[in-house]
Length: 509
Image (cartoon, rainbow, N blue to C red):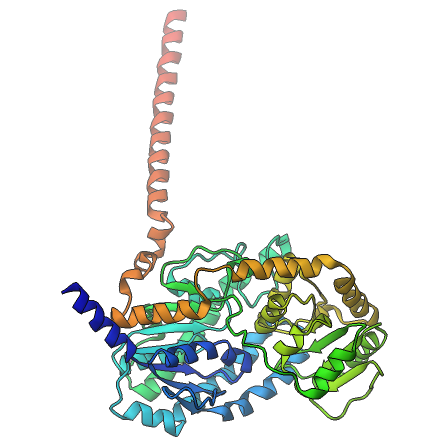
């Protein structure tokens, strides 16, 4: 009987229908999940994916992709503002209205509306963490939900899961702090924690709930109720890089360079450039969102002069044809297959905005980095890399950028072999896992499907009022007992003193 049940479960899981909702119009957010969709599809699951970046692989016959690529028109202008931003606290203010516009575009998509209105059923809904309001699709299809995040978890998400949160030990991923915080940093982190908890989060939840009631009726649940029903959360995080955190069994860290793909041939011009650059190559790229043309004249000149004076060749991903300066040792290209470039043995250093995927690729290929963080999690990523001694960071958004500073940093990470060795050691640790990150996500997703949810893995902390969790009533009880005992002792002492004084007076008479 047990054997029959086991095979029935296998049959059920192999034909599961899964809905993935990943609306963020950012390539790094999408590519982190590509291996997951591929593996789920190859295992026989029927996956329907709403995305801004379809994989478009005809071999994945079980993968149906709904493209909302037009969301990039809403997203790209935001980065021009953020490229010149000097106050990291304003990043959320800039992103919030853009995310709201993206969710409106998502819900108004003809394909999404058709999906909502037809009789399709799903066994699991997987939702990107930036859009928790889309967990409503789990209610719509009456199936369990899980959350995916292409980065580590924010305080808001960890709090919703009942995981450990502490503004000093675990500053929020949007803060530029990591380990060994000074007093000013600790104060900033605590104030930010309180602000997010008592103001920003409440406002965001209200707007998200308004969105739900607008499109799903006045009886639609609150976002907090949807989060409370989440069966599992997957973070693209690894303790070797991000630090250890106490989490419940329904939190799965699948980080560890999951998006690394098999080698592919380089374009002929890049292959020839890298092969013939025996003196070594410095690779310069600011990722998929920040454009080199948006750097501004002062920063561009500082960077161009620093790279132009290096005793190495330079490969610079520059997306525009309008290039103000073209030093002889620099090859400008609009696009590069970054993983294949970093894989080349002649690449000696990587100048990066230190987005998570770029950081992981540098670690995987043991290429030392010089970091120019801009916004979001990039400054904290830079702090982590500095803490691990795998690169040098220049915090140009606050302190500006000079030619000599950048040139010196590049030469240091190339000539000091400890940076490359530390990269290799970190990569060895991150890759030493009993199963890959993708395998973790697939296995636990199937687990949720098999058991129609994972309520039994929910952290019991979530069911305890805050005053009980902090033991405030117990502490107050002991304080009261101590206070009463102290008053009684004082009373007794006062009486004894009075009796002794009376006795002494009586004896003296």
